[in-house]
Image (cartoon, rainbow, N blue to C red; front, side, top):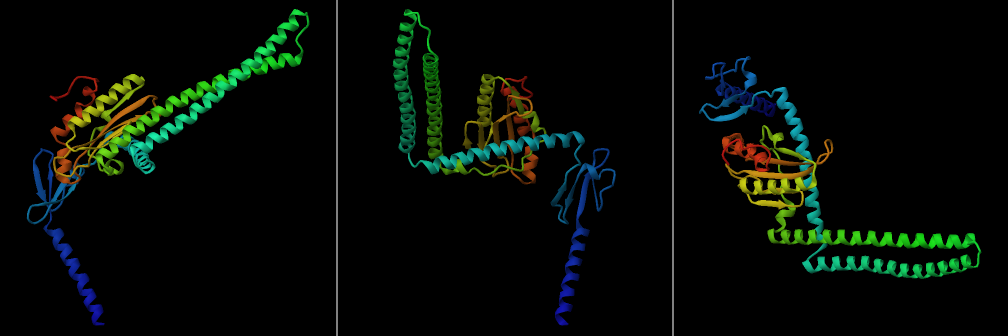
Length: 332
């Protein structure tokens, strides 16, 4: 019985403290004339415009943001789709990096793997060249036999015609295999060249590049405006190079990941940190590609306010002009 009374006393005490805390909270909002007003309750006609909650010492303890317009909600959905694509690209690159580091301990390991693969392909090419020489000798014999038959006024038998045709087709197939193996050899060299360059970067920058923190909670009101569509491969390449340079120039955090299709700078830690991600995404709906920039600021009230400020807005506004699309909106 005594324990039950004590339990009830604790519940009542917590309730009273909660009521007292709410009673001491002050809400501040902007009225219809643009003036700041404060009180215990926000008027219904301005509650959707957002307000701040202060404690009894006048410190902000909570902020209710204004309600979004239908256009802003639509932009938010489009932005979420772009971020999902970008995050998928980032995770795929991180997985490739982890696989690369797990496969090879040193550059020599990678070079040996490359040379082994190339040697295997070249061996298959040599085998087909040898087969072509054999087939050409066979074809020459068949053609000589056919020529002799023609000189004696005889028609080629069906077997002779079939031998000539099948031998010629076999030669054509062998040449097609050689061409495909030459393509495979070129692609393999390009693949290993990229892996070698990536392996060097990962080892120079440490394992951090292979395990970059997931970037989230971005503050970017009009971020979809920084998605640039391109269809020409050469133009997309130029825009992508410019986008990477712009990110490196304007981010205040170091580059964490620089890969073929995505560049990520380190997450923000301090109040005025600016983290930037640029990615080269396939445009499944419109065809071509989209070069996409996202900005991240520190995930607390002051950081979000900074991300809405003039400095970060300038970075957003000048992204497209920096890629050669439109005039600058402000001084760079």
